[in-house]
Image 1 (cartoon, rainbow, N blue to C red):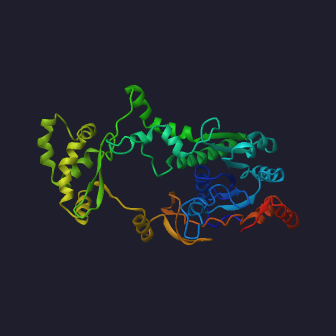
Image 2 (cartoon, rainbow, N blue to C red):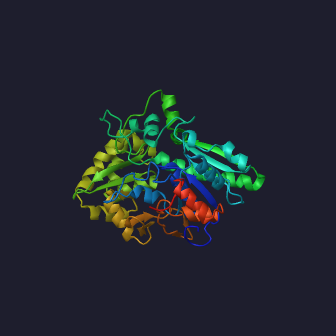
Image 3 (tube, rainbow, N blue to C red):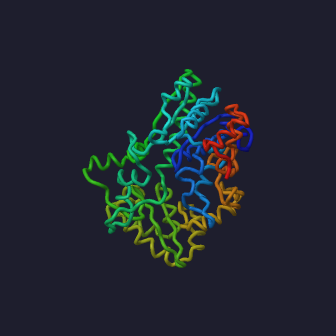
Length: 408
C-alpha cells in the first residue's frame, strides 16, 4: 500500500526502490515521496549504518532516521546474501511504465551494477550516489573541506578552518538525484531507453562553488579569498546586537534595500556626507562591500541603543531586508505555532509526538502534510507479496533464514 497523501500529487503511482543510507540518497528518495512516489527504502535486517544516528531521543531512537524517511515504505532485506540480492534486483527491475527505478549509494561487492539491472530490464533507471568521483569514500564534511569552504568561514583573525554544521552538499546531491531520475523518466517515455547515472558528492560541491564564480575568482587572482566573518561577500550584510542582547542580520543587496536601511536608521544624510570623502557611491553594491566595515561602525550604535522589538518595528516599517537570529528551540517553537509553516507535529512510531517537516513545494498554495517514517521492516511482507507475488510460506522461509525481517 502506498503511503497516504493528498490525491493527484505529481508522482502518484511511481515506484522507486531506494537502497541508500545517511543523507544524500535518502533525502532524494524523500523528495520523491513528498511528490507522491511510492518509495521503498531497503535496509539490512537490524538497520543500516544510519539507523541509530544522532540526534536521538531519550530512548536512543534516531530522530535523524525518522525524519529523513518520512512517507516511505520499509523493507528489511539482507541484500548481501545471494538470495537477498536476487530479490533486490527483482524489485529494482519490476515491470511497468512507473517502475524499474533504483536509487542507491551502496559500495563494494554488495552494490548492484547497472549491467545487472539492464540485463533484467533494458530500460531500467539507475542513479548511484558516491562520495568521490571514481568511487573513493567521501562524505559532506570531507568534501566541504576539500573545496575550500572552511577556509572562507569564520572570523578574519581565526587561523584554523571552520567546519559547517549543515551537510549542504548532501542535500544538494539528493536533489540532483531527483533531477536525474525525472530526466531519465522523460527520456524513457520519449525513447524507450534506460539510463545509468552516477552523482559524486565531490562533483556536486565543485560544481556549486564553480557556478558561484568562486573557483574562477581564486584561479584568476592566484590566491584564496580572505575571511570576512559575518559580512555578506560582495554586498552589505552583517549582524548587529540590540540593547537587550538580541541579534539581527541586515542585508542591503539592492539600491532600494540600501535606501530603506538608511531611512530606518536615520542615516541618509550621514552617508550622503560621507560619500565624497570615501570617493564612493554607496548606492552601488560594490562600494557598499568595499566600505562594509565603515558602514557597520556607523550603524552599530543605532541598533545598540534600541531593544529588539523597537528595532524590528522600525525595520519592518521601512521595508528593510532583515531577520532575527534564533536558536533551534525557538525556531521549532515558532514554526509549530505558525499555521502557514511547513512544520507540523506528527505521531512517529517508536518516538511519539515529533516536529516534522512537509516538503517545501506548495501545490495550490499549501504544502502536503508530513507523514511518519515507517518502522524498520514494516512493509516487508506486503512488498514481497504485492510486488513479487511471494506467498506466506515462502516469506516465512525467508524470514526464518534471516534474509528478510519484519518490524522489530
